[in-house]
Length: 191
Image (cartoon, rainbow, N blue to C red; front, side, top):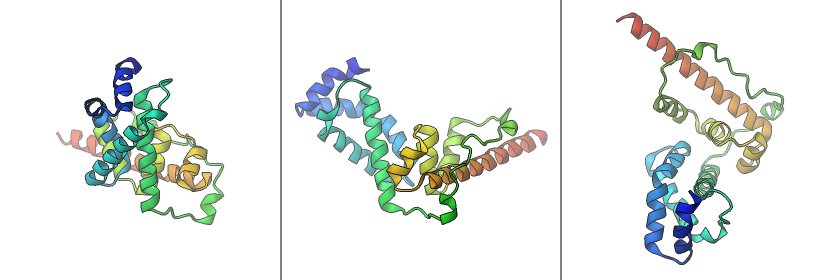
């Protein structure tokens, strides 16, 4: 994809509006999906999408062409989303939560999830229903692959709080998945 973008990027660096429009058209759908994962509503996601593209075009000279342009752009959108979230929300930090540094991240029971007919849309809707502080940490850890150390630094919280929020998000997600499975089983049994 670097080859596809190399000419367009060069033209964007020169301020070419048609090249900027081409970048927008190539990336807008994917980046809007990233924005929606972090935002609480569509309007906020649209604003974030706009701000992200403004940053891309003003900082395009910082792209070194050594990696994926799409990955570089995605990082900008995630960072904007995190900044927006930090401005809007203050994490509730309870002292005892900061002590929870020994939580196992993979302490999830998957045995009841087998045979589940959840779609990607179902899972995304469940993630979207999480309380904001859990949703942001869940997205950063599970979807974006950031470590608890990175999450803590980006959000200005402790690693223990990051771990605790992830654990709680996973607990909520497990309940939602189990509930969906139960509903599917009951619905199928009544047919």
